[in-house]
Image (cartoon, rainbow, N blue to C red; front, side):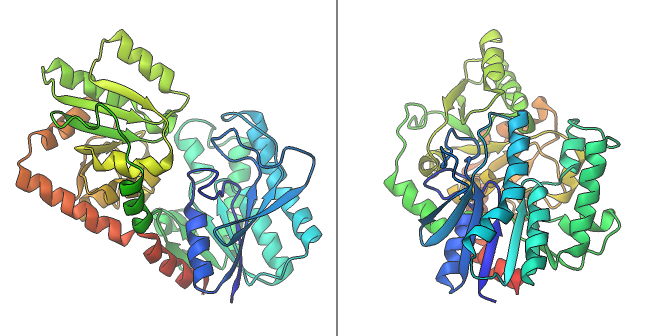
Length: 407
């Protein structure tokens, strides 16, 4: 069992974008003697890049000894109709790509869902090649869309997606979930959970340490040793619910505390709305730093006093969390505050942070102030625990789990 095809619409090497889970797996599997090929969309998600700018069906290119096959899909912006059309193009053009190139037959097809059409293509290709079929769930479709109110549970699209989900879960040889409660979810919908494996997102600790030393991010606020720096990194969209963090900053300002500053790194379609709130309410302790290259994130986080992530207060988090930023936060060795109430709370289990009441800016402000007022000895324990947590989510450890899953 040495040849693996990884199907992920949004796979990308670090040279093109930040979503590198499957690139990390691929490079490590290649080092361990596997033949790995990644099939990705030509449109690189959340960037302006499309690696195919003509009518070619595909583009082959190697990154870090990993061969990529980019399948031509259209450009899109945000969550418009072209994004959905691109999903369909990727799923169906995969078959033409495979026929055209006539690759060595795979032993395993690992199909990862940002969208479930990839599962369907993976299932058919596995049947055609008599290969083991591994289906990875990174987001619950359509359950996440239903929980966030984007589609109705009884709508036709939801019913179709629920049917596809059940079809795949029944037929996959192995089910991989990036959140710890994946087995609970499969059991809750009345299916056998015995094939479920849990492999969360993670961090490359060697690369993190290298980038922290080599790519130092200089910034007047980050380099100010006289303030308590609360740092957020990542997207600024609906799912992130950053309005609660901005309001928490406002509450802290109104309490007369002047040496706490909120530094927000990233971008997204809610950023303008957040900036307007800050301007209208005259919130002076929040600074939007914009999007930075991923290689600078270790340096930025290492200069923080407290890292924070926020999200919507929805029932789905009873199955646990898998935000990429959480593992970079761990690796920074700084404590974390979250307002995403969930089961399988990693902050609680590793004692490296605290989770406050979801949807409450007041609770988030109190959680931040708890660390601001904390003794150095207690604060240092949280820092130490964060570094220990990171070790369990290093990609070397996660790849061990992936090997077990595909075997």
